[in-house]
Image (tube, rainbow, N blue to C red; front, side, top):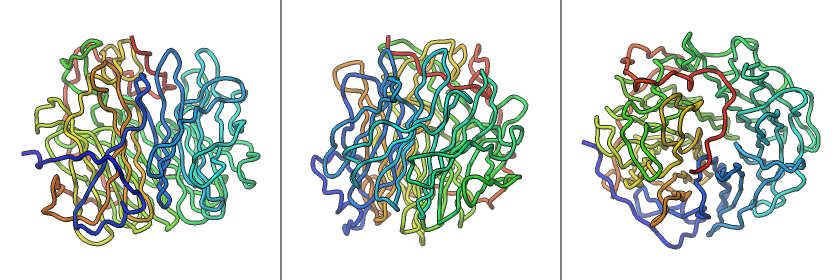
Length: 485
């Protein structure tokens, strides 16, 4: 059976106390981030610092718009990030600059038929309540069409921005630029590894301790489905390891649900899983990366860490998707994902689960929500770069989570806006210490593996829906979701 669940909604929360809970239970509270009548489909919350959290997200309309907002006991003003050329930004990726006590963010200014720039900006205070304008150009569209941006800052203040470079739909690898003056200027881009081995697409850049940067990237098989995760390292963001370290090799996960009979107000279709990875680093030198793998014909999340090897975070006969991972100052790891409400059924509603892996002791999880109806997510009709000729419901490509120095995590999710066919972006704040007997708590079925292990023997082929053409697996530039209709 699925572990027992319960969830609670708390109206007021002093976040400074969240990470210092003394009631002996894994607890969570939920707050709405955005409900302004648009379908929210992607976000990336930061690593929290003290009582402050910052979240970025995209909202769909006729054009996608990227926003940022901060939490310090309540959500602050939603700030839209507009590029100096007048284009709205999207695919925002955010982290914290501990040297300058501010948050930093990068995003692209996608426009149909034109190359995308990568823009950088930073908060003008330590709480993320206000942001520097105009945005600063990090990667110029005149030398490439950029996608999948991410940013990392090491404890010395060196800033590295990375993205995939495209020429048409041809992936030309993952490139980075460096700033040593706080982001006022950036160097010329350099290629990480080489085009053939890096693959570029679906990569994430992180920093850990001083002068340690890593790029995690998927490796692809002949059908362009991911079957491994590679790690490239650098001491300065310019000179990267010539050859990658293999983090894990596995059977390709499902890109969409085999069930196409989910129906909502906009129509019927499958559920888009996304098999992109998520990675985080912390100034204590630790890193974590999580990604879905094929485990007995189901998508289960695998997590690999710098000091603990790898493992399936909760091995069950159920799909887990849109997973995220984070590492805290207390040397603990967090994982969060969506999954179905009943084992071996792929039936909705969906659950949202978070799992805490302390520095010492056993992992513990909590089902924080069991009422998520994905048929209110964006309905993306074919043809689609994600679902091919199959219509599907999508909540984005990346659902990253953050954690802070106090052993607390922040994990977002998309849910139905009561009474209308829109969606809200909400966010759970989850804190330790764990109590195996606490409400909503379960013990995950963690299956460990050595770092670099090949677990392809766990994979079982699963027939995809008739008409699915595999477009989602090709290494192409990502296109925005269709606007609501």
